[in-house]
Length: 333
Image (tube, rainbow, N blue to C red; front, side, top):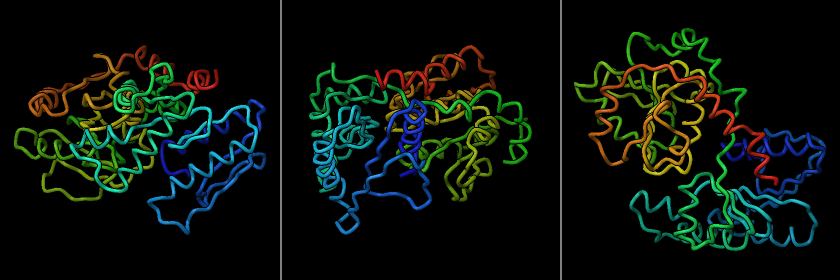
């Protein structure tokens, strides 16, 4: 628990239901020792550490089905590919993932992941897909009826990611060593190959791009080009978004892409690939969507990029669309 976006969403859901006066039970196979749950939350842990990692998810799903059938809950939601619950969050599909990377699911792990997808989607009464891209994958690749699926974008933490952080832009630029007189781009990821870093390195390493600066968050690798900078792990990404001029995300497969929503909320333009689910929240006022395989399109968009101040009305539109309140209204109706 509590490693990334889904875990953060779990805590948002938990706090929402607690504030509403509901009783909350969390079922998990693993709990970080750093996590402190509120005393009124019941935690049921099914320890699977003695089993091989490759089958733990399958064993947890089987246990969860039995547990839920033996206990009465008014509302049950899973953030994993399990069955027995009333509703499930679908942050991706494994078939979509392997196809986008031009792979074939031949390994035991791939077969298990696809089986988990199929059974979870088939047995769960309602599915919340994080984007239309993921919804289409579920319908086309898993043959699930469209009326079982609602597109529900991940909620945005507007208290952390908002245009007000841009007021401290100069301070943040000084912290990261960013020169405002130059045009500065950022790439934020911990899975660089899937997110398209290779394409950006190819472009920014050419002489034509030497006047443009690329900052990479999530990597400590040192690159030969003086205009490519590694920042390592960045805790305050809102500050980093506010310090640069544009976020680049040429991913070959990104079911949504929280980076995109967060950066636009901070007033930063975004250029993303057409394989990013968050392209559905982008219009010409806040960003561009480019074909992932069209290197020339990426070359032209970056080389001709001009600094731009985003329209506050567009930022507010995004904040309203992705607010936790709006998200929970859909999730609980």
